[in-house]
Amino acid sequence: MMENKNNMLNLDEDSLNRIIKTSTTTIGIVVKDAVVVGTESQATAGYTVATKTAQKLFQINDYTCATISGGVADCQYVVNQLKALSRLKEVEEEKVPDPQYIGSLTRNILFSGRSYFVCMMIIGGYSQKDKRGILYGVDLLGTLYEEDNFISFGSGSPFSLGVLEADWKRTMTKTAGIDLVKTAITSSRERDAASGFKIQICTIDKSGFKQIQ
Image (cartoon, rainbow, N blue to C red; front, side):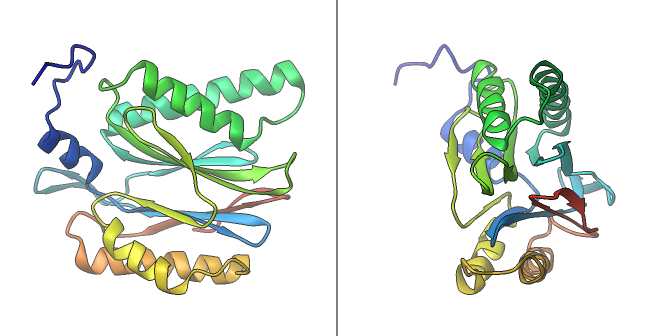
């Protein structure tokens, strides 16, 4: 098989699969006129719990947030870049960038540094232009795809996705969406050894970003 010279980390298929199943649980769902995004707070180093209070949910601007899974340093770097570039765009155009812009930025950063940045990110927000919730998944190779229902990344995602598949409804209210995200993350914390401790949740609607817990 020809070696991929563009893959600077020389990732084989098994290594790539381990990264994609990185130890965490992150979730985003679309509800009526909003999105609800959540994660848990455990960070691991191999079989060791490195911290019980890891921040994995970040506000990028007033209408967009991001969750992280993968290499913590890599993810923190990308988040800081997104915050800075979003603020610069806001100053230039005198309005807060839509989540579509942040999603494109995330894709471009990860694609231009593909295989350097070990990141799997959910970008969620509310589009002031389209008047609806927006949800993107972006992988470490820069692949971006929009979801119109829900998404979950990390080693705990199989457990969360089972809950979301069964209980998500397009007409859900924010309150129902928050309860569903809590239930989905709790199912992952119960069954996935790499997911645990406090839940972090936010909502974003036409009024902007709101941290729930």
